[in-house]
Image (cartoon, rainbow, N blue to C red; front, side):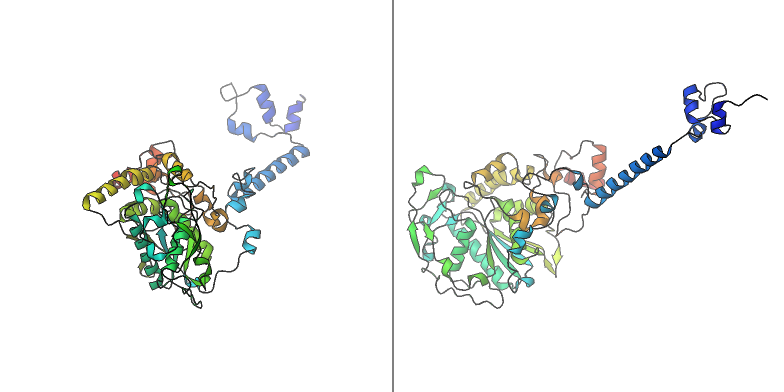
Length: 446
């Protein structure tokens, strides 16, 4: 009897995969075997090898589970600069901040309508009756000679709208934009509204008295003496620090507040929504913006789209978006020049850079922040942290719109690309669609 080879004894009559590989046998060789037979051939694996394979498999499962649960963020070693963890950046107000805040005032649970009055300058006067005098304002040169009348109309209209709607919160928005005044645009507008003697919107259960701050009764303590020629922006000789508002009785009960960090029109809208969240503890269902009529297109076609606010939507049978435009009183030629200037210096810049984080728009924000103020909305409105940090490449326009979930737009849960955009993106590899007008030009293709 012919003895069996050692390989035959170990494999039970079948050659092992290792021996097949070593022998170089293949389907092309005479008597070769197929790949299937080679893979199904027996091989020797020790207990240690099995344990190692099981360990690697378990580790892989754990890593994938962590990725699924934490969305991949746990795999990153560090959160964005300035944040201690991903949690502080993506969803929760830090405990030490939240515990030091009182609960929203009684009556705020009924608020759902945000009314924004956009700030454009700083009123630093001491007498309401002099509100139409340039000398009581901190103005840019181009704002002299009539603009302040329009500013007051914006304030008056905002107060009127909010006072007529018990669900409205009036937010004056504008930061500390002038190196000649530590007062913000928003605070000065608030001061002017309180000192006006108008019927102000008040939360239920509060009694607000404007007896100490009626027309002509807001007194100041110290005049501004800076040389107007040596500074950026003009300070009128009658402009003074307004000290009248702080002593108004029941001031905490008015349905008005300030948003003190916005540096341009986009931030006026986004930051006011965040301020509503701070004040009421939730986000608004409706937004009304009061500003220049010539900026209506900028707000509706660019800013609202940049934050994906539903401008055509309805809430409780009322529109979710409304814009009240009031322009300067001027002749037709002057208005035409203003509209053309807005188109070139405002609309077109934001059309290319919808979040204002590049080039001229970024430079303008830096110029308007001479005292290096930082807003708090990353922590006080943490649901907006990603949006606040969103900065797509320059000149991508609508194709760089923030694509992820927002509190007021529950439709988007994933990457935010529509079917048409996805189809076009597949045909044009390389990420962002280059032409911001594509959605309008080619919308009928999908």
